[in-house]
Image (cartoon, rainbow, N blue to C red; front, top):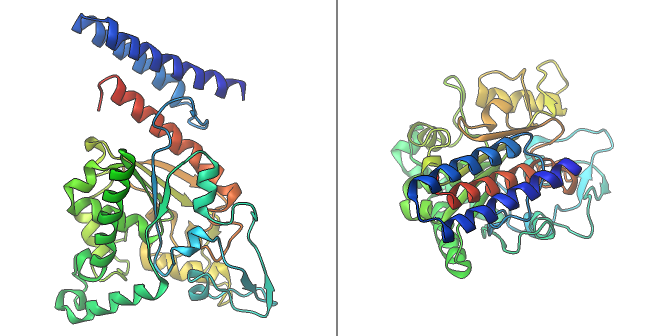
Length: 355
């Protein structure tokens, strides 16, 4: 804790020095040298180990837009994880987990925070003043069925707009609104499919790029192995081929990917167990199922080249596991400090004139 406070105070001192240099220095060469020294000193303390909350620096907590994952409703992130049915046999159905319902008879509320029932309020409690959720009703996901009318979609070669254009348009509209209301760039926080759909939205809209501060993804299936199965009918492969890795980082968009390694896929496990269902899910994306992941997305698919990569050993994918998913109250604190650290470094780089 003492080192965290020291590091945070040092960054604050760096920021004040920069402000003074801007107002007092009139020699371009000397000012540039000072900037470099300050930046190197800041990097030395921040990059190791990137685990503190630099709340003293401006810009570490921009407005946030949460992007729901496939099958999820906006309310899942606002009202909190719904009470779920825990099977007396302990058997969880994959589809039921994905839609926040678990098959069984004994009802049990597994949420871990009554005070802050949803991800939105949990972020607000941690200092983010503006937090919105992209408005999505669960039945709206059925709109992707309309893609069947498109020949490229049926052939598995459709771009994201074919079946997910309605979602991408909504991202454009909400980011523009939030940016106009706050006067700040927006942090996109994409859960599951919301992560790669954010990449698709950024890739097609240069104005959105200018309004976006960072993209943080939680268990997003960013990659499909060449022998894997693209269930998006070409949309995800299109994103990876055209906007690979931290594609827009040199344009000022910070990338942070968060993945879980809580579940090892096991082919010989009993059908319906987390290990067997994970094996099936991982195999579709990674081409093999005997790997680790968050129960739905294999770890190898959750990270992007060039991004700050955070791997959580106990995090699970679905809101259907309320006390273990990425947005659970105690799990947030395993990845959020590194996000705010990156944002603080980004603000510092901008302040000293580096991109």
